[in-house]
Amino acid sequence: MITKRIIPCLDVRNGRVVKGVRFLNNRDVASPVELAEYYSSAGADELVFYDITASAEGRSLFTDILTETARRVFIPLTVGGAINAVSDFDRVLKCGADKVSVNSGAIRNPSVIEEAARRYGSQCVVLSADVKRVNGVFHVFSKGGREDTGMEAIEWIRSGAERGAGEIVVNSMDTDGVKKGFDLELLKAVTDAVSVPVIASGGAGCIGDFITLFQTLPKVDAGLAASIFHYGEVKIEDLKEAMAREGIPARRIRRE
Amino acid sequence: MIGIIDYGVGNLFSLKSSFAAVGAAAEVISDPAGLAAADRLILPGVGAFGDAMDKLTGSGMAEALLAETAKGKPVLGICLGMQLLFERSLEFGVHPGLGLLRGEVRPIGEVIDPSLKIPHIGWNALHFVKPCPLFRDVREGDAVYFVHSFHAADCGDSITAVTEYSAPLTAAVMKGSVYGCQFHPEKSGRIGLSILKAFAESEACL
Image (cartoon, rainbow over all chains, first blue to last red; front, side):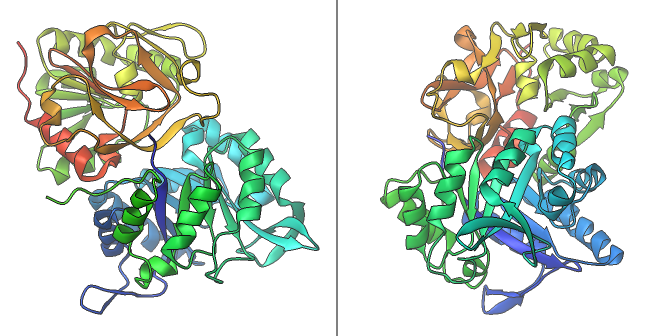
């Protein structure tokens, strides 16, 4: 039985995690490499590094930490942020990323999905969509959620999968940060529209939100979250244990 | 030294790092003549079977690899690299493989529940079929990371482990010192590293 994946997401600026994470003796940890190792040992099934750097200098710091992470962490690593062209795929894949997540870059130029899928395989191409309701219709937003594209989201996601995206990250801007649970209505619409794996993002506030997600929508493959993991509000070990208890297939780390 | 065969397919960074993490010396080998110097070989691979086989043959790596395995040198094929060990593949036409193992590579869509997603992607459990030295630190039910749309079928008694995706899919194979994993040990955490370490310390079946 394939397990439901739990994925912590780290925002990285100039090679450091944006908000330092408090763990291990109340020490603030801002090293993405150290955090990746911590999450990997805690049972994270995959990691997402999101580069929110604006400068070229920050960009090279990012690829340095990516390389170092891939040297030390042996679970799948997805990289997003500032991915606009196939050359950006190339840049991060060379540093040890396994998958590349494209968002605004694909909105500007949808053919980047096809080109990257042809070159690296669909398994490598993740389409990430920031979605928000506008007058009751799901719209796709670009530029980190700052700009309404006016495009209907489900159709955009469906066409992305058709172009060759091998996975979809659905980030609900309506539930993001609210911590009252994932956007089940949006996620249901997406899983009904595409046959590729769907990763839910935005809204998780507690373990129960993940349980509700996987029980209500068995076609959702993974749950992604950031701050609740970083601030220790949800511990991955506890989450996996709760999933197993509820009969949701989860990968557990064996402790010797 | 472990030779990671570079024939222009896929990213070898993680494999190289994995062997470093388990303290095994590994080098990427891009010249067929270099295979003789390695005492164990890794055949990686992602992408399409036909294209990979063309590159393997065109680079001279296929011939060199067959010469080395004929001497009993251990080889581990990973993901598409495992599939290449078989007689043929039905991925986009019929393509001959290396023929080191009996069996053929077929779409998983033929055997799985139609409501399940293709590719089979994510962590899934290993179920042992028969003992294999590479599993010395792996337990029944341990999860490893898969990404594939095709599987090895009709492989007779070479199967050492399967995984369940509404149907049993070939997860690992062995015949003499020819080994294969459909999953990615280099992406399967501590369990995956233990498999690579066991391979690095495996004995040749001469």
